[in-house]
Length: 441
Image 1 (cartoon, rainbow, N blue to C red):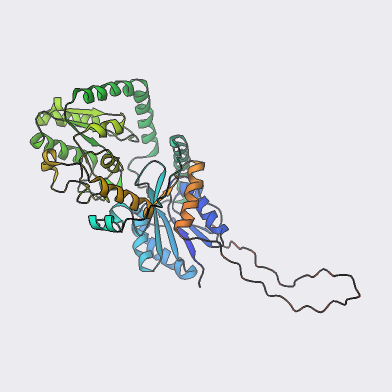
Image 2 (image 1 turned 120 degrees about the vertical axis):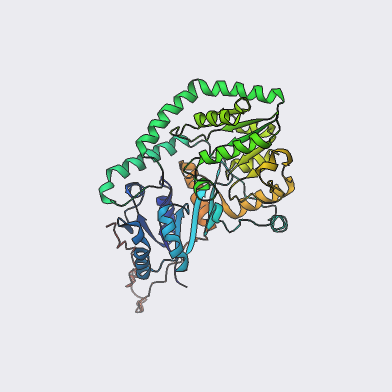
């Protein structure tokens, strides 16, 4: 049987891919990696590495040539909608490679996602009927998660290193364009402005605002925002951006929601603040005549909001599974794994405001259990503890086991005279050493 050969393309901006590759090598398999930018190079090893610095449209032919030379069996990527992966994955599937796609966890925290051939809107589990989740539910041996803890600081540090390396080595990658919409300095300036405002006074103020809303008993719906650059918005939804989605939801709310209800729009915790969603919401609400019925929150305890809400509207977010867990009627406006009859409302947004119902909890329990069993790995991409757990789970999920080395050829030994002292026997064969012939060039 031919030994597997692993090709790593672009990964998350942390050491995760490098350490995963090292773990695969330690089990006796060959590992190769392609760097597309300075950040990739910063977080990669120095063995079996290539630099791709040509125009992106040349990538398929370049990869096919590499495959003809080395015959890869598996390719590993983070995200299947990045420009480099949109070019590479169709070719690699056609060539018969097994495509392993990582993504942030469908259930967070403490989980990451690993699926073959695609995630989110490209997942093979997409649009399964309720009967699938009920009849194909796994046994009671459900994976248990070790708690990871917060990873914002290591995540931020890795991101800074990645962006700085992109800038420092930009001349080595003249054709590279990031999948992120804003340059690094603009994002960091946005964060520098947003974080102090939240920490100093906004969190305290909005906590009081949420408690007053809950205590009032007034019916409200929640719209948790996603990042404008998220593939769930740009690729797996009918919207071109978050602003369009907000306007469509607010327009439907103004026309069809109960007159005594409120719409709570909560910003994403990792939003950079470069897009002024608060201003957009206030202007749209005033135009639609619902200025007094819309609340915009920068922060806030999401479980509290979900537990008391009359309904949750979203595109495709992990908040969706949280909403289902808390018994909140939910509608998904984009392509989502959990958007199946019995879990989410299927009759359109305009009817949802009056007709939405809570999910079938038996179905949701089976759905959650199956998703975790088939696609989730305990760990994260950012902290030392999380990466260690994620690598162990990944090796198991990809069925990477230690390769048994080939037995060295033994020379014929002459008999040793019994009258002599025992001799040291030296085998003439020499075991092959690992060779790393391919340097980044």
